[in-house]
Length: 85
Length: 85
DNA sequence: TAGATATTTAGACAATTATCTAAATAATAG
DNA sequence: CTATTATTTAGATAATTGTCTAAATATCTA
Image 1 (tube, rainbow over the protein chains, first blue to last red):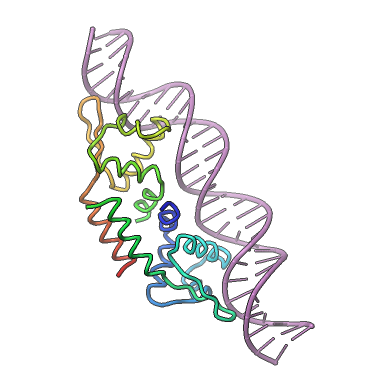
Image 2 (cartoon, each protein chain N blue to C red; image 1 turned 90 degrees about the vertical axis):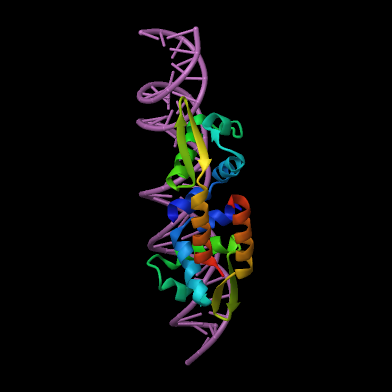
């Protein structure tokens, strides 16, 4: 749970998620939306991966990142469960 | 948005929210659930206040903290809007 | 195999954060 | 008015985090 909320607590990481909502992308594609280095992006992606928010799949030279939508359902439930309603 | 997610990104603060879900409490009542100092608790409460997640109301000597439930609805919508579905 | 492209890992650094103790402020009770 | 209780503020410190550059690893192509 901590891993999850900490992953969401960074604006750049939330932006990555929004970007991936449109379509799967490689690291370099994602990178065009940001100013920081590839290493930094890699670090953010790692945090999102650990939080189970994205999935990485290598295809040859490239690694495709996608939203782990199944987890979003769970996240949503957890969220409602903790706080709500 | 950042203020909100950062507020939620700490386990102790989420615990505070869960505690307040049961009923409103004063700082010292909340404090019994934790090991850290009153100053630290005050700091966490401040962060939750800034994130609009709790409301503080002084009654004489005491300050009563309560969940700002109206905001939870908004938070939930925002959450669904960003990530979901 | 060598060179190019894609991505991650390692190590460093500055900014932020969670915590503490001590002191300050607010309100009540004697 | 003074002492007591409730809470916050100030200032310090250690841990965590976001970022960087440089180097390492993985894959493809010539």
